[in-house]
Length: 212
Length: 212
Length: 212
Image (cartoon, rainbow over all chains, first blue to last red; front, side, top):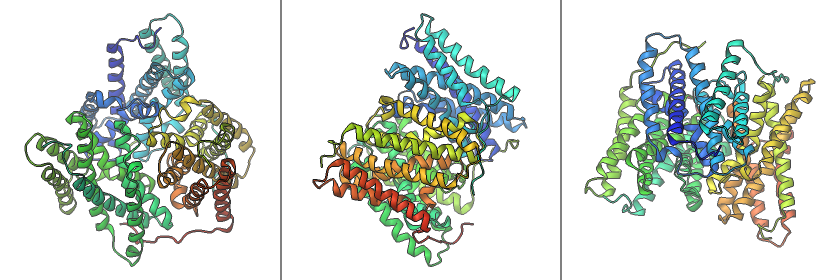
């Protein structure tokens, strides 16, 4: 595949899905913290555009993507506003949080790798950039809401992104159409993450002695 | 008004005011955390230049502003050093913290919108960039000092910046002189924020069920 | 000395040492937090490349350094993987954490000042950029692991970096060979920091009244 040959429609659709997913995850965490509704919107927008913004700043592709495409900011804000009344009805939201976070992680990790390859980085950098793009929105969300960051404590979290991004760069060397490669790689991350959640799979923990 | 026609003297005066205000807020929070005096200086500088630095990196206007104008760093550091002995005399500082934070928020939000329009972004992006510039210094301060971030939990906080930045971009389309537009918009943010503090106004809270 | 005349071999060796040191510090903190092994790798990489990435983004020298030199990412990850089994044997690691953090602080602060001068900033900015580069990796580590940031609470921490960076820019005006200036300045930061740890030296604390 030619990494730059992916149709803009597919990329925009994926960015659309990832933005909604991460905005929902931000709104749900905000809900658990009793923020006012605009605080919820702010957190949702930061989660949704944070990873891509950091990716673009690291790559030097500035202004960052949402300066050119501000509708992603609007989409994230509207998603948060829609999420609030739904959740207020007493939804038991923990599972929705895990699901929306997993979708955002999967989509943004693969899109991050794709964009990085598109500006000519080598494949290793593209994989690292993908993992960063996928996890950073969640890092912002968790740090601001004072939760333990999923990327550090989540079962099979960043490693799922790593595997998916690696599959993406491998398949990108083949003749498989880019749309197929994108969806397939995203699917791998998502399935790995969801299985880890459901089966409580995890990597071995690193138990050093406690700090003083 | 022509957004680039504002005199440098006015912009520097505003940046001067905002820098002092946010440096004071950083120093006061640091005081509440029993840092040593250089930790106080470091936190004050980060609060004072953090928002503008993020704005410049997102816009791709690099090196960031204080590389060209390092005296803002010096000003923030000196402000922190002056704040320390004053506060040590046993000042009950909570109200000064709220006030200095409100001034910094108001000034940097409007300056952020002005700079964003000045480099040619559309008005929606300019508003978002203004809100980011206004709130980010406080986010850094609160995360580093392990406080609940004002932007997420404060009553009428980011929304005050949003309203002021929106008024700025609207008035920027008129013939009102740019200096008047700047001061007026900053005044709106400040007044909204102070009324919210004094009257304990707030937006509806988003109470989802607690997380597990 | 000519700040750009330092041999790449010396700069790479220093970057090598700093990367390992900060990766070890990240892995040790991660161990104290019971992360899984890939969470440890992620934290170690962020600590090791975070300061230099922020420096490059602030200076507008993008893509950031590790996009061109991805082996620093690999080095940090491998260092974390090697640290895990060693620490698992029950090492009492608090002293190793302080030592590795001090080495990373010293090396990255001076390299940050050197790079900043190399792209033509004035010496004051170069000192500030050095302090930022030195402390930011540790800030990331501490915020993500929910520890009190060393830069704010550590005894003689950022101020040791400040003194070393100042000595670097002063000696850079002389005819002393750049290699000597680099090692000497790094040594100053390291010795100051280690003495502060061992002798429990600290700057006066800033005790304001407690917040409400």
